Length: 512
Image (cartoon, rainbow, N blue to C red; front, side):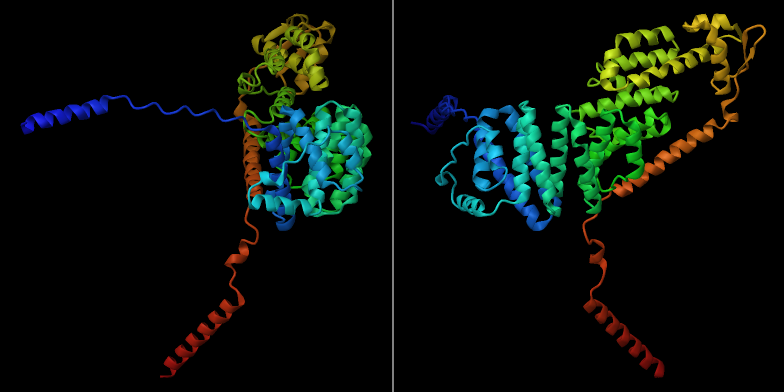
């Protein structure tokens, strides 16, 4: 046949081969979900490896890795308690010796231990490393992690009486050790033990132990425990309404500068609440503002803490005569919880005493639950001042009885004293005709002829300087970084020899 016919046939065959559907690939079977018990066991081994590396190298990042794994282990225990708690019991049974004082108590709080997987399950070197790790003595840091996991399981399970007895034994165990590598883990022991007492309603019972531990941490320069214990003591005093003792503790103690941002945010929040209750609103506002900035900025982290700081900060701003920003009330995560406080802001801004009473009556339970009821009651005077300011701006002359009717005062006879106090405090620029019972407003003064612009600039400059100082303090440098630029002894000798040879050469040239 001709070449053209042959080429056409080959083209048709290629087209048929191309158009033919490709064989369908075999469907892969879906992967089986991971076993929670296996993952839990692997995380415990990883935490043990991190603790051993931290004790050996003293690098804080390994301790932080172990603490993060402890948080993951707690979440896994909450998600699947039945398969993970036997694994925890097995880890305690294998790690704690028969003569350990807490072995029986820990195992009694957990289900029966799960059977350990055979050594053949671990491949090659991993199995050998695991066997060597089991033969090593249990480090106090790893022992504390396992005991804390049991304590958290009891707290999350609602077994508070057993948790309190374990917390007592745990605090005694921590006090018997004197290891600096134990400090990051002892901090969590104090925190969770105090939390167990707080959930049981007996937080005052652990206060003496916390005070003794705070004194010891100050003597040992234990920064982590010192910051945590100070916050726990402040929380203990505030829960018992002992604000005078809390203020004395603030005056007699110093918060460590090397503490974490989380502890610093808590300290600033407690300080702001104490200062607000003691009528130091400017200092309280500064502390609460710094606490909001030190808190995690992610929308999914520390939501409750940021919400409490925003609520208290809004009330303090109102007590200062300022109006909070609208962004706090418009955010999706805070819109519903902040609605009662938004009504307070609207009542204070407009000076509507009736709206303030309605908000107080409607949301009294919310304010009491937040611990802000006493501060909200102080806002009544601010509402009256705001309303009186609006009346003073609207009327050049108004009778005191008419002003009392517009403000909806409970006792109109107090209008004269309220107006006199507002004039003395500089809220309004007016005079009172006592014989006629008339409030006479003066003309509006030029703001720039007063000291208000200077005070505003001073406030902003102070904030910028404090922000710069905090940024400088927060900068981290590698250890002994300055030593790398310094020359060693050999380099110094070599440079001196070269300088001497150069001086001799210059002297010989001068002679010639």
